[in-house]
Length: 189
Image (tube, rainbow, N blue to C red; front, side):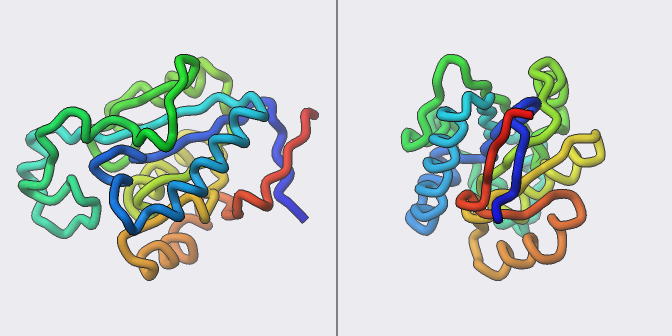
């Protein structure tokens, strides 16, 4: 039985699906899943929010190299502005919303909370890269702000399967419902 979601007050969010992160070979299955999720959002007429990261220079310089997000490693921040663009496989339409974050969470130092409140979004289906960093950080802060999250686990990925699975098993279940794209079901009431 699928996870029943009310389309009213529902939105879809993609985290860090940009050239510098998602444009790498290991993420092809995740991109295909995000395309399916984007198609569902479009056919269900749900608001779509893309959150991408362009780190502040002081954040880049303070990184010690532990982060698994490619561009967050010291000296790895792209200099080509196109690297921060959402990947072509997930076309951004004029009615979509794009939020630029500068740290791991999509809520810290951005207009995301105000945007979601203006759109009357209470529940967010989320996917993106990396499950254990950008996705989990955004879900944790957003849950503390009162948002309900549904993590589409097949539309998320980390650099290692172990990191992905650990986030889905140990971190995210405290803040979100975990499901697959195929298990999403929608009603209007």
